Amino acid sequence: MFIDRVFGNDTAEPVLLYLQAYEKGYAKEISRTFGIPLNMVQKQLIKFEAASVLVSQKFGSVRLFSWNPRWPFLVTFRSWLQEVLAAMPKEMRERYYTQRKRPRRTGKPVWLKSTKPQR
Image (cartoon, rainbow, N blue to C red):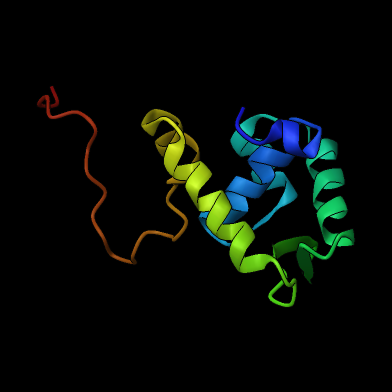
């Protein structure tokens, strides 16, 4: 939508903006978030890693991707991505880029969705 023409495909934009919003992520998580086929997300992540934009670490059976702190254009590139996120419609930003990432605190009560009394 915003930067797909710069990178030549539709997968690059959601992958980059996801990493901008959450700092790190893995292919299946990104694929599920946007409804993009897993193999397309994996290919895009590998391309960015080959270009030294991203680095990855293996945690068990999951490969976690994050920004390469040694990439010379990282600060400039990420500030540009932040501007793209800011220019995005609020509904889209809230839908894709503001997900809960931490587990619920232990012992925190689960509130009922309905306030109607049970019969």
